[in-house]
Image (cartoon, rainbow, N blue to C red; front, top):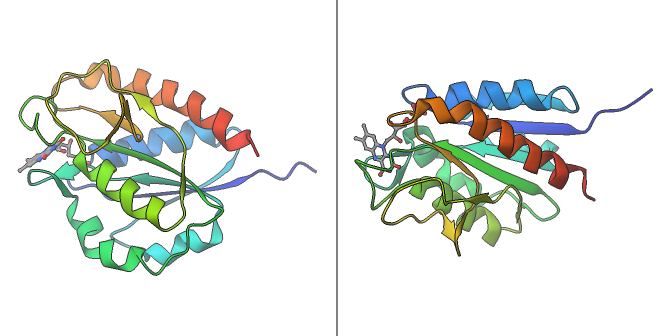
Length: 174
Ligand SMILES: Cc1cc2nc3c(=O)[nH]c(=O)nc-3n(C[C@H](O)[C@H](O)[C@H](O)COP(=O)(O)O)c2cc1C
């Protein structure tokens, strides 16, 4: 019998863009892995303790802030030890209206979780986007997958599929 690697996707979403992406990521990855999906609105962050591979979804809201349910959860993240855990990040943003704070939430979460030992996987090129500033940048790359359903929804599906390819390689790498 083949035992599939267990992956947790935990996301927050106010107007459903990030939720839709979470469902697509689940569908893509569950061909190869056991993927469990949690909305942070309904679940405690401690749920991630049972996983070595975690995918976190959070859009940026209110000019550079985390989505509201992640804002409530943020202080509790400190209680989790992320050592030996691979963590990937994705979320929606708006590169034109919020050009100075595009995808900031991804950068804020990645910084916190890395400080608690998490190993970031799934870095993405930032070249296909037009924005002025982002906390999600590490050098020229984003810490994870950003997409912009407000301005270029037609690109989201392709971005998700390409990101899942990157993730698969890094998830399978010991
Ligand atoms: C009041 C408001 C503030 C926003 N602030 C930002 C921001 O600072 N950076 C960004 O990239 N997107 C920002 N956005 C865009 C949202 O991230 C975008 O609409 C996204 O699709 C929402 O994701 P959700 O549907 O998963 O909640 C903002 C949107 C609104 C309405």
